[in-house]
Length: 263
Length: 265
Image (cartoon, rainbow over all chains, first blue to last red; front, top):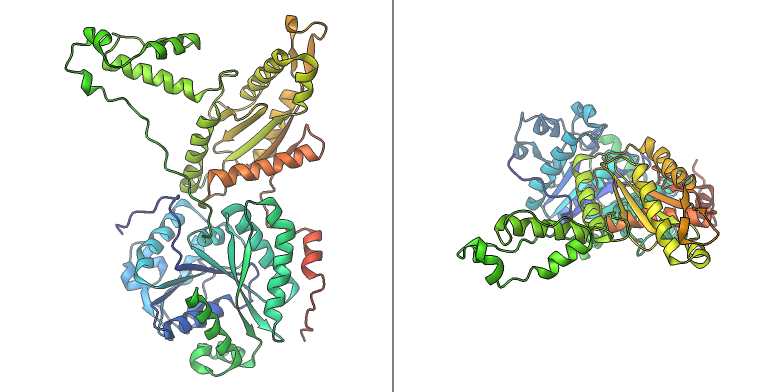
């Protein structure tokens, strides 16, 4: 790997988007994979990087059995080019694999490896989605710092809302993040996504924005309705967009991708 | 743009090209040189700095002169501490270092409490004496590797590289107490008052490890804590909680206020 590590003052590229949530189990990986499929369908070159180094599950969601993972790249057993695999849905993935538990804590090595991999691979794609782990650990925060944009996946329930808010607050205060995209998953009625955005924005305006320079703006990228087809696709370990493309949830994800492309 | 503007590149130390002089013998250079050193030398001797050694006009002598001027322009005249300019350069360097190494670093912002009162009651000469005394107290209460700077009238800042977050409170508290317990002898400066004591308010924030940040953002966070220490009664230490991820009761209340959660079966 000969790519020089970019200097810390270099700004991360805008086409790299971290997908994070605070709380686990809100559909972060599901959203990453299907959003990637929708972007790929629009003719874009898309890579999803499984940045949940400790508890990777992008391979599970996509029913892939990778021979080569990030672990092999980190240890020099494999080249990066060999580790970038085609996935169903027309996009590419870089999988963490299960041998990565040792990377679940941030060390200078993990930091440099991850930065190098992303710097090397990012120019080859139109969109790079970094699927982070749950929580607000230093690995998650570091991964987000490598992305020019951030997407917070949230569901309309108290714990998810609280954790999404905590994530936004940390990103605003410690990383100077001022724009955060929201995707509200599992909505029960039309317009609930807007209500969630509004609610979060209100608390941010009251408790975060007065303490920082500028103001954090939350942008609703989309709302995905609660849909039995999602559960069905997840259990079959298939992409919703491939298996049930006509369902409301699939259409919502396509619309979210379109909004991202329009920016 | 999601991130704040990145720190400007550190300016390279400007060195006056000496090659233009090298054709004339060094001994004559001092007299025939188109450069004028008199003012620089005067400034140095007035500031109590030692004058450059070696043959006047020689490259080594000129380098020593530049070094002395650089040193002079990095220091606060009253206290001898790093001045605002030097502080900003050091802060930028520390942000880069922390992002690279992942070592924790603490920035403290300090302000003398009710300093205007000292000036009003005892005069500016006494005020200067207080500032000098506080400067010395700060220097005495931190490690030699830490950078203590005077960044404004009665404002100071300390950069503490490689300071673990578990020690932050202890260090900041030690600094505060050191000032509190230090009597400032005004002596013959002021009729009547022989000794006064002052206190400082201290705000602090750790640089985000691993993560790109800016000196401005870091300073803002430390200042924010300083304001809170002032607002809560002064002579206090306030450090940004290392887990800013904690969501308070008030935040939760507003977060759930008027929001209708659906019944999840």
